[in-house]
Length: 240
Image 1 (cartoon, one colour):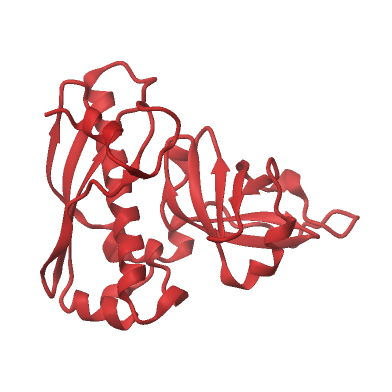
Image 2: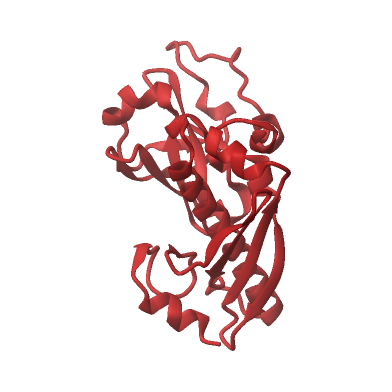
């Protein structure tokens, strides 16, 4: 099975770096509803090119496949629901805790998985944009230490020395309201559904991680901050 060559040859929605060492998300996956309670998707991932041992490479490729699957499902459900963009599927707990039903690898340690989500009444909840199957992951569970907002510098802004810098802005898409965050520790410290933020005019501008990768994370700015998009520039520090 030549998963890697297949990934490199198909038309991508997005490609991060060249072939090898990064997650790719694309239209290669087979996906659909098994019944009204169960959704499945087949997705591929490639290993971190810096890893050497087979165990490490396959583990990283499997993690990349899972992130790939979760991202594609979130984007697919956004198109199915009648609720439009009001549902943040990247934080739906059922999607983030799905099951890997099978995993296969090729000789280059690229991975292909079958990822499955099951919840009674799941399809109806997705369509309606509400219901028990769309329970959101509590941001306090996935977030790191909260900001100490009581510690303010004399200029009236946040004390950035007391914040955890996670990376910098790598790109801004004003049409899709998405921000790419460059972070050397993204694969370890940033998870789907996490809340990251920027500081603009002493205000927290929050965004939600929708697709974390090895060294970058794709985020969507929260709706209430859309009017701040024009102020976001490359290389601005991002905090968690």
